[in-house]
Picture 1 (cartoon, helix red, strand yellow):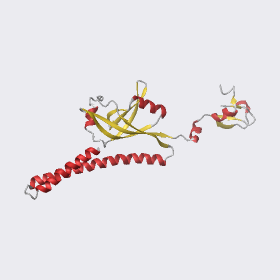
Picture 2 (tube, rainbow, N blue to C red):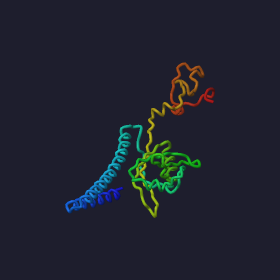
Picture 3 (cartoon, helix red, strand yellow):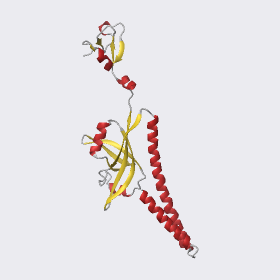
Picture 4 (tube, rainbow, N blue to C red):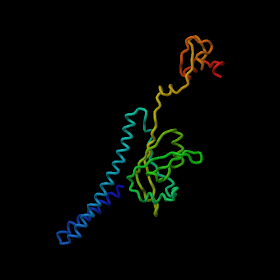
Length: 231
């Protein structure tokens, strides 16, 4: 994108200067057209720059939210290249044609799915699939961060060969921290008495008079399961 922006600025400057020189020489119409073309090129270059800033700003927003929210964090940031960028999508559109039409400033999303029983992930621009995360990467991330969600931004739309376009992205792995208190709330509760060596699922079992509820994991450290109610 930096190269495209520089080219637009250079073309804009060239046409602008040509127009400025032409107008005093009597070529008013041609000069005005050149100035207009130059201004348009510079405007397009500025928009490219602004678009990239907006993507960066969105990424900073995700990071800021994660910093302010203890339950959310970016576990890992990975730079990678999409695979499957030469395939056709279900609507018949080739992914090369999609990439060819892009500037690199577009917002993209990552959608997880399962392929042949294995974790996989599409990268999309709107409803258009651009490609996939590499199979090994998708599997590794799902094993390492089960249930995580991903956000991504385009780093570059590359031109690796004759009419071959690629897409390099930066991927953030976003996870939710599970607090110990929250885990305890979801953990099964059992009942014990101070003078007993058993824990019970039924608070009325064995004639308990003052049963106390505790998490199962904690009960297993000091008590054994009641053979009557913990079958």
